[in-house]
Image 1 (tube, one colour):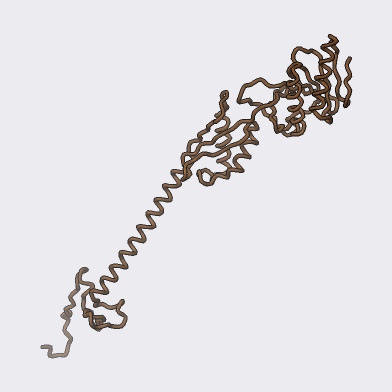
Image 2 (cartoon, rainbow, N blue to C red; image 1 turned 90 degrees about the vertical axis):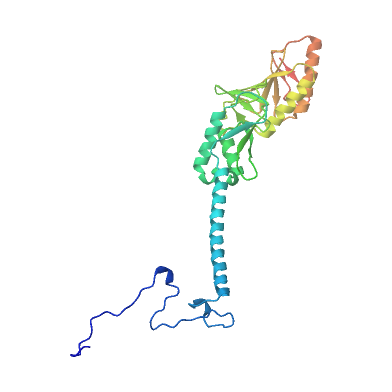
Length: 304
């Protein structure tokens, strides 16, 4: 007993609950809320300390749903990354569908690599801009008539399929040989290695100056019809085509005949071919060997 009214220094007992008992610890001056009875519905049941089995099962179900949602997001990320890895073009494969010589595969691969360096987002097979890719390839390699992309349904295993232009004529000008197809496009690589009608351009206009096109479609069609009609006349196949400096004139040379035949691009090629054949028949009958034959005037033929 304290006779002088001094307070005892003995500390009050305040037991502490363990970590596992935090959910059930009794705290001074705090009211426990909730109920464990399934027949009683307390207010603010989700924030109660005492919870029924039904509420605990409901919270466990929500917890499981959150875990499954997180796992779903992780799985989607893994699938997306796997798809990008599978469709990424790491190795450049080039294929050729036309029989022919030895294409310059390394040059094509370097051009494709340069394109992907300038367009890094198209490095995935599903995102390639086919139209732009083909245009850049044909600008760098005019001998390509088309560029196709062969890949699996998911965008992987990409291969670039190249098709080459079929030459119609071989054009000698400026110390170079340019092959020409039916569209009038000039290129320096012949994939097929055939024998074509030689065109000797003495006009002084270089395909390099003309942007790679040495002739219009109309002019190429003119030459094609002319050569085909003359060859069909059985008076000698066309072996050489000469474009002199004069305007709109084209000279032909036939097999076994050393003299040129002068034609004009403004005249119908089939009519000129008919005039050439008739003139050659008459020359053979008369056993004449002229210096040249001129069929540039309609309905007439001149020779010297």
